[in-house]
Image 1: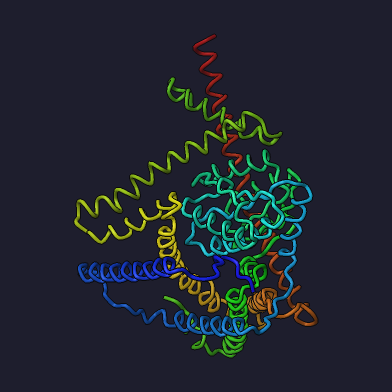
Image 2: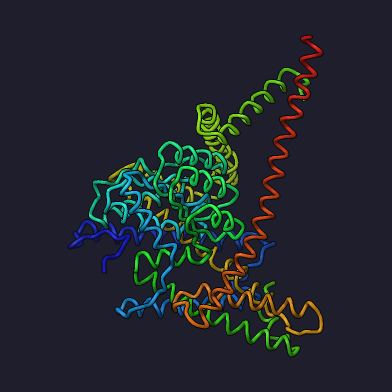
Length: 307
Length: 216
C-alpha cells in the first residue's frame, strides 16, 4: 500500500542513516534538557505545587488510556492487512468531483486550511487532507493555491503539498510559490483570500479547518465566482454558514474522518475505528448513566464531574 | 466627530476605506484592491511589531539577558532552527522544531479536548427522565438527540435500517441546532453593520456641520 506523506527511498544510504540517528539524538537531548529545566523551574518556585499527578483528572486519564488502547489495537489490525470498513461520506466524494471539475475547466483549486495555528487539531487534520488533495491534483497537473493565515502553518503546508506531489510521482510540478502566507489578522486574511478567489477564479474551493466569522464571507465570495465548494469544520457556530453557502459540508468529526477515508492509510483508518469504538463506549455509558439518574442513583454521574 | 484636523483626516481615511470595502458588494474593483492591500500590509507590519514587543522581548530577551533564565534559550534555538527552511541543504533541521511544536501542542490539546468535550458533556447529558413536568420531557429530547447524533457520526457501519433512521434523527437534530446558531450569528453580524453605518452617519453629520460653519 502506497503511503502518503513518506519519502520513497529504495535503499537507505549511510549518510541518511547517520542523519536520522543524529536527529533522534538531538531530539532526545533537547527533551531531557527541557524536562530538567521545567523540573528546576518548578522546584525553584516555592509557591507552586510540585505534584506531577492530579487525582481530580483520573477520569480523563482512564478515558484517554482506554481510547489509546482502542486506537492502537485497530492500527495493529490495519497493519496486519485486515480490511477495515468505513462508510461512504458524500462530502469526500465531492472532493474528487471538485478536482475533476477543475481539471476539465483548466482552472486552479483553492485550498483554505482555516485561521488557527498548528496547535489546533483541525489544522492538523486539514494538513493531512491537503496532502491527499495535493496527490490528486498532482496527477491531473492543475495548480493548487494554498493561502495560509499563520506563519507556522506555512512550512507544514509546504511539506504536505511537496510530499503529495512526490507520492504522485510529480515532484517537478510542485510550486512553492502557490503556498502563500497572507496575514495573521483574521479579516486581512479574509480580504486576501477573497481577492484570490475573484482574480484567480478557482474552479473549486476546499475549506477544511478551524474557521470563525470569516467563514460566511469566504463561502459567499466563492459562491459568487461559481466555484464548487466543499467545506469542513468542527466549529459548531460556523457550520450553518458552510451548510448554506457550500455544495458539500463535512460536519464536525467527518473532517477528521476525511483524512482516513481519502488516504486509506492504516494508522488513520485504525484511529477512526478506535474512535468509533470509543463512541460506542460513550453511548453505553450514557445509557447506563441516564437509567441510574432516573432511579435516583447519582454516584455514577458524579464520577464524571471534572473540577 | 470632526473636532480637529488630525481627527478629521483619520476619520476621512476610515470613511474612504469603509466605502472601498463596501464596493466589493458590487464587484471586484481597484478601490477594493487598494483597501485589501492596505489591510494585508498594515496587519503584517503590525503583527511583526506586536510579535517583537509581546513575544520576543518578554519571552526570550528579558528572561535570558535580564533574569538569567538560561533555559529559555532552548525554545529560542528551536525557533532559530525554523529559519533553516530557507536552505535546501539544511531544511531538514526545521522538521525537529515542527515535530517538537506539534508534539507539545497535541499533548496539551488532547487531554483538554477529552476533558471539555467528552467527560464534561457526558456528565451534563446524564439527566433523569420522567414525565412529571416539562423538564423531564426536555431531558428525554436532549438524550435522544445526543444519542442519535452520536450514531450519525458512526463510520464503521452503513446507515441502513434502524441505524439509518437514528442517524436521520441525529442529522435533523444537528440542523435544528445549526439553524438556531445561524440566527444568533446573523443578528451579531447585523449589529456590526449597524455600528459601521452609525460611524458613517456621525462622520457625515459632523463633516457637514464643520463645512457649513467654517467654509460657508
